[in-house]
Image (cartoon, rainbow, N blue to C red; front, side, top):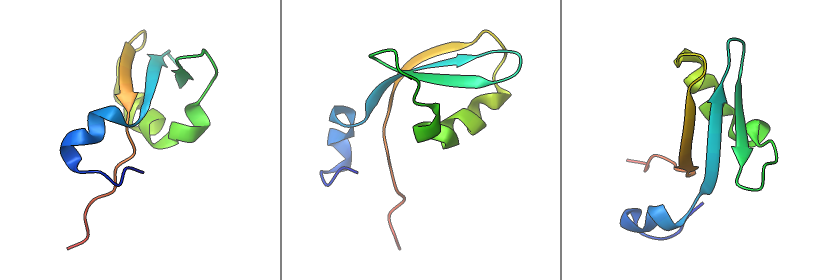
Length: 67
């Protein structure tokens, strides 16, 4: 988790490739290893995407500020 200000969040996180199939969503690290279990909240949320969707993005941990 970043202890820096919100504008610097682009420097944190992990490069991730997300692949949707007919049955599942799989996330890969830049090295090619499976990281779905580490980003399960992303995988579950992206199950609504169309099959054969591939996203290349930066997965960044974030927690909502407490009021």
